[in-house]
Length: 177
View 1 (tube, one colour):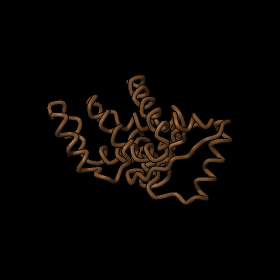
View 2 (cartoon, rainbow, N blue to C red):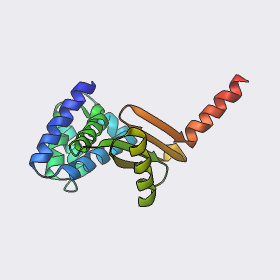
View 3 (spheres, rainbow, N blue to C red):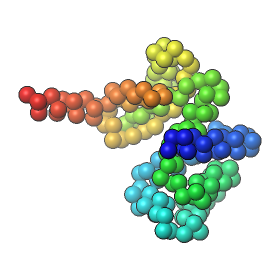
View 4 (tube, rainbow, N blue to C red):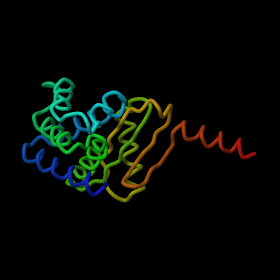
């Protein structure tokens, strides 16, 4: 699946680059993927293989209207036509990784319960660059399920400093005693 989603992301990257719209498409796809993940009804509708493509496109049109770029809508329609909405989050992640790599950086996705201020993001980027030995592009995502702290992903490495993870570890330790 990773190869397939990377291939779709590569096609979207080429399209968005050719249109001069890469940053916007990248941000919009990530936002749309998070919206689909957050809504069970929307996710089940768009991933239902029995639902006709025309109906899915109507849902997309209602959802996005004129708020997304023409390039993003083209990319979303491609994903719909391939019946791959279940993979949109991975496609968006691969697109972000490819975009960061095109400028010589690694993508660092940072999830936190609240929006991080610019100074915190800069300190985090410096620490991640020191740890990874390469330049990083930090993308922040607000994820209330984290409760507190942050979860950072750089490539295949995940650094989980979330309160949720610490509470789970504490809970497990108490059960083992």
